[in-house]
Every structure is written in structure tokens, then in C-alpha cells.
Image (tube, rainbow over all chains, first blue to last red; front, side, top):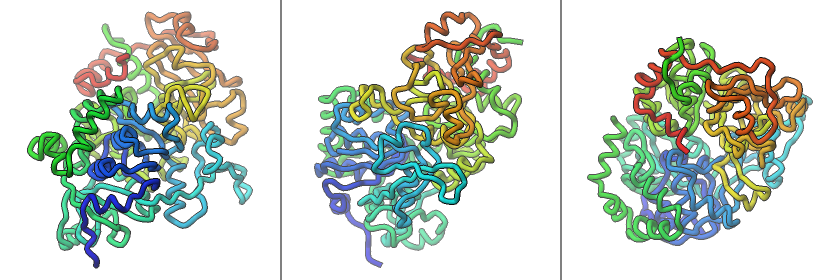
Length: 297
Length: 264
């Protein structure tokens, strides 16, 4: 097996300007934040982001000017608010939004994963969101004469899917410990042309074989593995650590003002030259261990 | 016996809890303190077998208190099962057998029970306000669920004659429009910080049923951005009992986290 382990900077090269990126993100849950910071540092432009419910990574990428389009079911940091930088950019017309219900989004990606021209759902019938998006959503009749209409959702094949997980071996077998498994790790990578996984730890293959049922992505479906401890910070990585309320609050405050948002990104994202420097800047691994206690409380 | 003192959040939670029967299955999403507290109250009182999928992840969790997030692991770490979402949760939800009742909150809610969480303003692509997005409500409104709305902000900005964009299908233009589209289920009840409303069976227009103690019919109409139908037998909303209030304050949410939903 080829060794899939590489650096953040090299893995980020799989993401080109203008790419469609399926990004793991569900409000404050696990997102591949170390890779998001690397994409901002490298100055990616014109990205289309595909998320289930985009949280802080969407707001950081929007504030850094990396996005031209968002495809997903919602954008929210839950208790930390609505992602103000993203919201303002949409209101200015700088970021286009393709808003899908959860099943419509999953139908698009499920079709992409299985080589179908479209998937179907009963979701969204009667809403205004179908007519707003005729390029990807159409109401069709039941061909078997059942009477009920369904919504055809055009297949979506992202250029690259990026996820963060608990561990992987060098072959690229990626494991998650028991936690919430959202579609962003269950189906997004299956639909994408390339898959990048950042992980808390790189382990020996024997460690993976001890719990093969915890593998969420098999080696052949993974193109690059990057070692990034606390790589989801400030989002959560249950059961290893919880979300960082302090940094989310600081961002939510900064995001109300473009200059404060830029200063925040300079300090925490563009300033640090590496993931390790970022961790030092938010208190260091020692301080972050308080998030571990929070997760296991 | 009604409680000698209670607050409106406790009244809403007790009223919402009545919606759910023993043996129902329920789910909650983000920042949903009223539904979460109502489920926890129902499970401690009349519906001990209410099956709860917390955050659409954790089956029958036993949280010691209501956490700051109603989606994150603090709510569901101690669960009977973790439900995978893509295949499992959505199969259970889309199958007509389970999860037949669903609680929804929209930034806008209109006279025919349509909700908007998408965008405010006439130009969807250059909105005055970009809202979070339809998420699961764009599904739940269309797949035959019985919909129950809650709102802690009963005002003319939230209760509008016609939502700017329908991101959760209610009765659409009213009458039989929803039925003609082949959609089953639909909105049944709206529990707000002022009143409880339902939908008149023919026109499918929102109708005032009960006003909370101390609130008048006129005040509810003033807080609503369209002419309300008013039931002939409008009464007072039943206040929570002393035991319900004790359970909410002492066992369910001792930190008062639910109040976050009621801050302006």
C-alpha cells in the first residue's frame, strides 16, 4: 500500500481554485479546521463549499474571501449565532447560495456517489426552494402511476471531500470512535473525486485491525492523510474534546465588524505559519486539554 | 393544582408537552430548548415511554441538565443508541410509521402555517437578511408529518400574512392547496409566548384558541401581522401545575438554560 500520510500544505494542493469542496461541518461539530486554516493561508479563491449545516469554517472562509458559492441545508453556529461574515457576503451578492433540504442535499450526493443522474426525495414539495433552483431540482411524476410526485435532485460530484477523524493508519483506513455520524462523513467522501482526511493520530495498522468496525473510510477511498492533533479545534471532536466556547464567542464578536474579523483571521489563521503555531496561539495543547475534560465530564 | 408562580417559558413547555403521547417518537434540532424541556417533562409525567432522538443522534438520553447546545454531545452522550443520520435517521423519519409529530420554529410564520427560515426580502439572491436555511424543516413539512410550531417571539415581524419564501410547507395558499399537491399531515398547533392557535379546518387559516393568563385577545391580534380567526370559545391557556414547574426548575433545567430562547 502506498503511504498516504502527507503534510497539510501538500494535501491542500489537492484543492484547486474554483473547486467544489465537500466539507464536514455540522454547526459546532467536528470540521477539518486545520485544513480550512491551511486553505485560507494558501489564499484559495472561488471555492464552492458543500456542507450539511456549515458552522465556523464557512464563516472563516467567507471572511477570507475564499468562497463564491455555498451548497447546503443551513449555515449556523447554533448558540454562537448565524455566521455574520457569510451572511453579509450573501446579502451583498458575493456568495451565491443553493439551499437544499437535508434529504435533497443527500439525494444529490447519494446520486453522485452511485453514478446516477439524479436522486429523489419527497422533501421540499410545496416549498419555494424548488422553483428557485431549476438547474438542480425538478418535480417529476411517479413513473409507476402511484400518483405522488417526487423531487428529482441532480447528482453532485464534489472535486474533493475533506474530513477530520480520530485516527488513521498510513494506508488511509480512517476510524471514528463512537459518536454522531453525520452524512458529511458517511456520504460526502463517497461522492467526491478525491478525499483528504486529517486525523488526531496516525496509528499502526494493528491498532486499526483491533476495531475494524470503527473504520468509516476504507484505505482505497482516501487519497491523503494528515496528522493534525486538535485538528478540529475550535469545533468539537467527541469523545476526545468539546467545542471551544471561548474562541467561538470571540469570533462571533469579531465577525460583526469586517476589520475586527480580518484582525482575528490575521492573528489566528493567517499569522501562524503552521498548525502547531495555531495551537500555541490559542493557548497551547496544555490549555486545550481543558476541552478534553469538558468532553469527558 | 396550578403553580402559584410560573414564567411564560414554563407555561409553553407544559403546553407543548401535552402534544406528545406515550409511545410517540420525537426528535429535536439546534437551539430547541422548548421542545427539549417539553420532551423531558412529558417523559417524567404522562408519557414515560416517549421515545426521544436527541439531536437526531442519541436514543433516549439521560442528560443531568439542559446543556447550552441541544445538538451537541452534552445532550446525548448517555444514550441507548447513537443513530447514524444518513441511512438510519432519515429512513426512520421518511418511513410513515415513526416520528409522526415534528416541532418547527421559523423566523417567519404565516396565516396558513408556512414557515420561512431562508431569506427575508423580495430578492432571494440579494436578500435583506440571509436566514440560516431550511435544514430539516424543508423535509418535515412535505413528508406527511403533523407539524407543531413554537415561537417565543409572537410579534408582527414573525407572524406575517405571507412568508417571503416558503422553506417549510404548511397549508400553502390555504384551503385544499396542500391536499391537492398530495401532501399529508400539516400544521396543527402553534404555541407562542402569548397564546395557542390552531388552523380552521376549511380555510386552513390560523385561529386563536387560548390566550395565556393575563393576555387579551386584542393583544394577540395586535402582535399578529394578519387578521386572526378567533374561535368562539376562546379560553385561558391552562397554566402549568406546581409539580410541572418543580420538575422544570429542579430536575430538568436547574441552570435555566431554556431562558436563552426568551432573551431579545
